[in-house]
Each structure stands twice: as structure tokens, then as C-alpha cells.
Image (cartoon, rainbow, N blue to C red; front, side, top):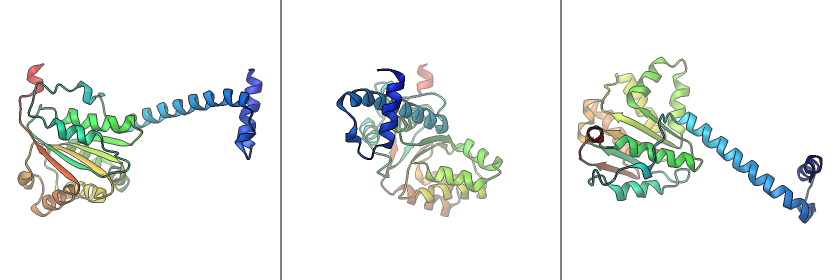
Length: 227
């Protein structure tokens, strides 16, 4: 069928009050075009979500070496991977020393969400503090991190925020409470969060993360030493 004829069909499709007006032959042309356009739009959407996500290297759960560290709570991680982040609120805190795969797994969960068309963002605590410090419109930045469907705040415990910065982090977590999901990776047990936040702030943040929250401490060797 010619390009002119295809254009005529598209025009009819846009103008028709009843799409059943199309003939079977016309549907044979239109449906593949619709499927192709929808697929192209989905690819474009995923690229846009990935660009905004802060993920620098694509990491997937399938790439994780579960055998190297059998103490990683695989069952709980795979349960999180089945979460419909756009419909459910699930919080998770990955606790352990550096190099055991916390960031890889957190970013993998975000990557899976993005592949399903769900907005997700990963940012380290250091980078978040620096962005908030340099931002000309802090309220807008806080709003973005407070509303993205899935947020991974990485490496909590390696930066000691000022009281104002700690309050910004609290505001982000607080605004997300019961509305959107948050994953945090940290080297500190919950009882040690008073090292980076005032006691009241630490308690308030932990309280909000406890809503549908999973705290997963694990130990093991560093993957970096393996390499």
C-alpha cells in the first residue's frame, strides 16, 4: 500500500467517531503501524527515564554473582524485584560494609523499574547533599526526590550532613512516606544513625522507612577484592 494511502488511513483513524469504520484490509496496515509507534515511544520513554535516573552503569540482577557471597539475602531481594513500584509502597534498607554489592542490587532494582516504565532515581548521599547545596531552587529539587516513584539513596553514613542538610533529607523521606518507595544503602545499623543525624531526626527517618519496610543486614567479602 502506498504512503499516500497509509496517510489517508491515519487521517480516517484520527477523524472517525467509530474506529470500526476501518475495513479489515485497512486494519491490517494500521495495527502494525500502531504497534511499531507504541514500541518506539516506549523505547524513547525508557531512555528518558534512564537519563534522569542517575544510573551511570547499567546493572541487572541477572549480572549479580550470588555464589560469591551466599549471605546476601537473595530471597528478600528477589521479592522486592517483583514489586509493582507504581502501585505499591515498599521501603528497604540494605546494611553492610563497603563492596558487598548493596549498590549493585539497589541500582538493579531501579533498573528493573525503569524497564517497566516506572520512574526511578539513584543518588549517593554525598551527591544529594552537594546538589542541595548548589541548587538555586532547592524546593524544586526536594520536590523531585520526594515524588519520584522509586528513590535509591546510596551510601548513607559516609557523609555527615549539616543540620539543614539533614533536615532536607528528612523532608524528602518524610514526603515520600506511604506514597512512594525508598531504598537506602548504608554501612550503619539503625542504632548508629545518630552518628549522622540528630537523635530525633534519625528516629523520625527510621520510623517512616519502617512503613512496609525491610531492613536487610548482611556480611561478606568485598567484590572489589575479587576483581
